[in-house]
Amino acid sequence: MDETSNAPPAPIPQRDPKTGRYLLGNFGAVQHALRTDRLPPEFAHLAEEVAEFCEGSITDDGGLENVGRRRQALHEYRARVHRRVAQLDAALEVRGLFDQRGKLRVAWLQQLQQLVNCAKGIDSLLGLERRARDVSVGLADYIAAAEAEK
Image 1 (tube, rainbow, N blue to C red):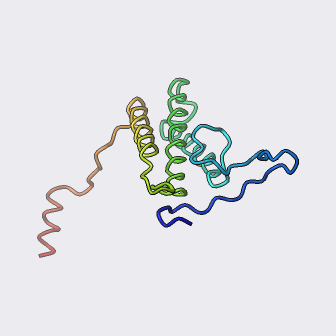
Image 2: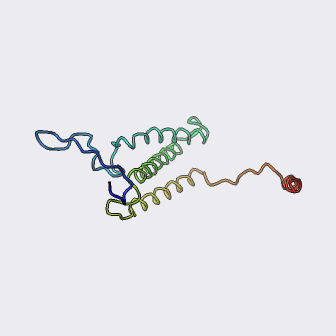
Image 3: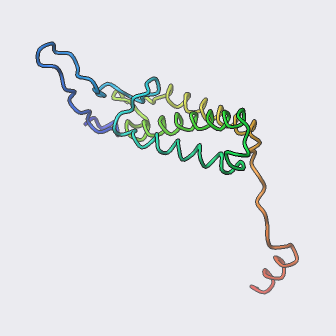
């Protein structure tokens, strides 16, 4: 393994003995799989994660019966973007931030930033802005507790 890469060595792809072509399901050259619907084994967990994300997002918004079709579509788009973010993050974890030549994977990081910005845009359309934390302790109680500690 190269010292500059955190990635495990790639498995040797299986070839057809007669034609020499790669067999179906060869993921030897797959880097991040963003442009395919078939996922390598190391990314197989992402489909379940996205389904759970979409279901939880719709549940948080009032449930399937209370969410209109357009809003449901926004939740599905958000889940797809979430899948791509998780997929690219997993690829960075598996392959490392640096390629075999020791160069930073700038294109991957830029794509990740674009996906996160897209997710933030969909979240704002859904009305999921950041909320202020509820402070259950009042100011007078906080001051009294601070004085009691002294």
